Amino acid sequence: MTQVTAASKTVILRRPWSAAQFVLAAVLALVSLFGIVATVAFDAIELTFSFQGAIQAFAIFPGFVLSLVVNGVLMGVRRAPEPNLLEKILLVIEFVLIAALLVFHFVADGQGVAFGLAMLVWPVAIPLAIAIAIVAIVRLARASGEI
Image (tube, rainbow, N blue to C red; front, side):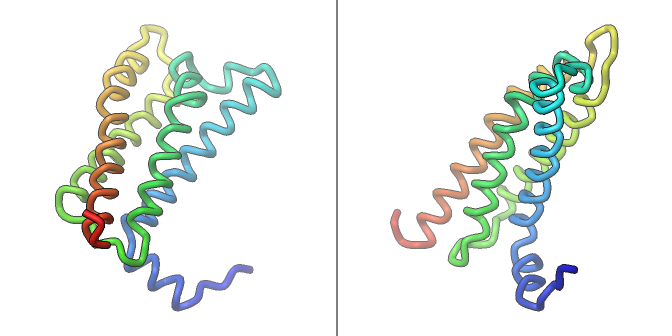
């Protein structure tokens, strides 16, 4: 049984935005891995739930996992400043967009509405994830005196 120490509680409570990104990255990684393994190992493309689900499992979600982990590490560095209001707003928007993509991932409608909605969300969510990483990198560089 894993024991939670006071130090680990302090880190999670001190850096909740970083912890939230790691949790979301883990969820996306599991959904993506399930779709990839189901398709590649078992030739069961239907387990990705839809065509758009397959696109998300193979390309979109792994990119978000990478982005969220990098952001989580950048925001979790000891010398990193606390996320400002803009970063928090951008993170909330990113979390909402990813939650919408997760919902669309599990919807298989015959008319392609979920696919259309996902296609509208991808071009917003992907640059937003990149922008959040850039803001975090610049803020970290400023805090360490490199800029």
